[in-house]
Amino acid sequence: MLKRILTAAVFLSGISTAQAADTIRYELEGMTLTDFFTERKPFSSKGAHVRMGYGKASGTKAVAKRRFKGPDGRYEIVIRYFDENDGNSVIRVNVGKKRVKRIVLNRSPGGIVATAKNSKVRILRKNFLVRKGDPIKVVGVKRRKELTRIDYIEFRPVQIFASLPDNDLPVGETTGGGSAGGTDNTSDGDGASGNAGTDQNSGGDSGS
Image 1: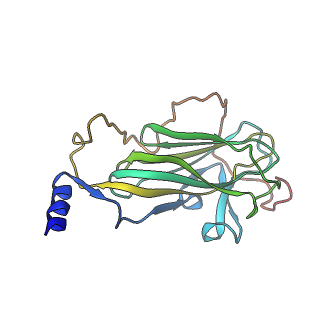
Image 2: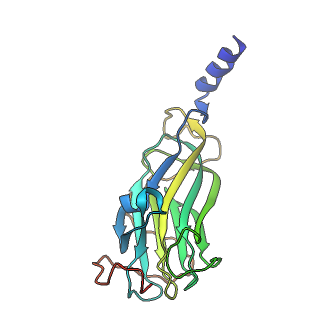
Image 3: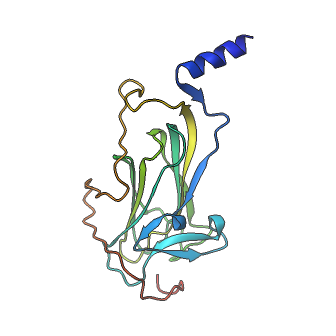
């Protein structure tokens, strides 16, 4: 009886625990891509990841976008990428109107192409507020010859909110739900530029 009362109190407050919620994983190759291209490898999640095009200049930017389809709540945000030793590329992740994390790929265990050995799974944020419909934006910035290979982004539920009005967030919290096709006006000094186009280079691994 006490357990039922506590459970009812939790849901009446508009908040539930995340015990029964599933982890949400978005494969980068399944997102809307600009200057990212799919590369198939058996050690990648679902057999594929994305990379930038061969022959692109250092500083070129590529983008993957989609909207978050899970329930409102707090999530641990995780990304899997490949850290090669032929550059120090940058990954930036935004959710809603907020920057989640900017990371530099400069701790490679070796290799100039994606391998199981240089795959890394990294926690970007442990308790980040996300609302259904928030735009997700993953940006890769090429540095030297590293093609910013990324496998997936994952949202692991920490706390799930029941359906709430937009103005009924926990005290002190704000979140943005801007257009997924909008411009990223945040700046971190990468000086990167990117244009949509077709990869005219070979899909092999010999020229990364």
